Image (tube, rainbow, N blue to C red; front, side, top):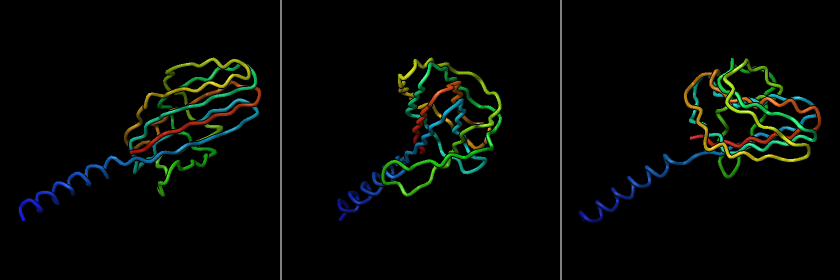
Length: 155
């Protein structure tokens, strides 16, 4: 009986630790015909940890895309996020296109050759905590047709 009890307790401990490791994956995609700023931003309350995973950038003409963090909160043109996988959850992070985010700290700049897609492994860049000033923005000067895809996971 003790062995059975020990096995059951061990099973429930393992099951509990596995369920806390479950994460949810989301994406946004936007096609434009001019310059674009896309922001992924934490909510004021109820935030999860957000890990940026992949960003795909494309422009039909040569362009520069800058990555900035922690600008003054974006408030316009919400982009709907898409659930990836079987999660019935909705994203806590918010996405904005034609973003009016304020200037943030410039992290990097990416040069896009005309008609040459660029895929970036974001190395699990982390956004953590509540607050709309916690955000990442991709600012593109593309004057042609642009495609922007951002994927993240939330834990």
